[in-house]
Every structure is written in C-alpha cells, then in structure tokens.
Image 1: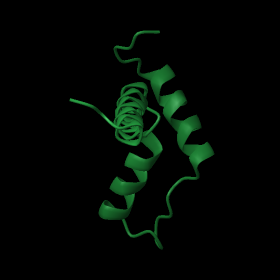
Image 2: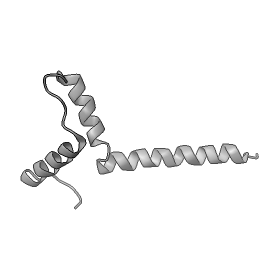
Image 3: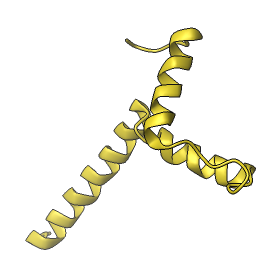
Length: 73
C-alpha cells in the first residue's frame, strides 16, 4: 500500500486547510464575514450600508467590554 508524494501532500494540505478553518472559526476570525452574510440577507444594503471591517471590529470590542461574555482571556 503505497501513497504517491502528490497524493500525500494533497492530503496534508487539505488537513491543514481544515485545521486553519476550524481555528479561525473558534477564535472569531471569520466574524466579519458572518456579519456581512447576515447583513446582506437581513437588511437593505443601500438603505443601511454595512460597517467597514474596522468599524465592525471596534464595535465588537466595545460591545464585549460593555457586556462581557464567557471567554478564555
């Protein structure tokens, strides 16, 4: 049972990609993308344009400071 080098490296790349996706989700790195998905599906983007990424992260941090939720740090 031999695995070719390209097949092995493709498997490793898929595994690392999945791990990266998971860690990004757990750490909240995909929060802005989720916000945009929600915003465009729930609001009229012309009437209520979405926050910029910078505004989003500032708002998120300010809200977390005002209303702390369970988190590790």
